[in-house]
Length: 102
Image 1 (cartoon, rainbow, N blue to C red):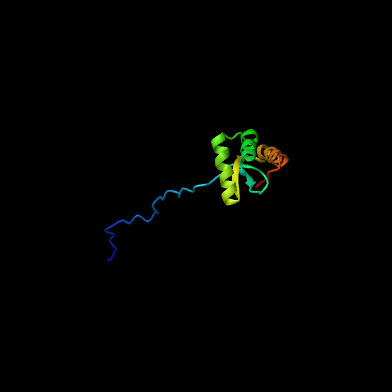
Image 2: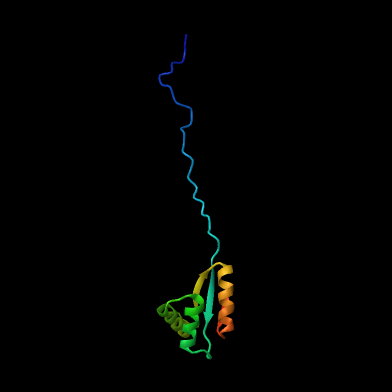
């Protein structure tokens, strides 16, 4: 009588595979920037004084921003929430500077 001899037992069950790890990026609250623009009206001294007083820059930081504005046309002088930046922007505008929050 002919029977089939199984000489080897095969494992037919699939091997366990670990689930792929998915990285999820959670963006923090979007930061905004206060942009100061160049103009032909205000002096370096006035711009620097405004940045120190309104944006709480150190003198050196304010001076560097003033030079960036002068040579590149604009500079992000502060970043943060709209709640923080809008009053600063309004104060800069009240001082005769050109600024906006983006």
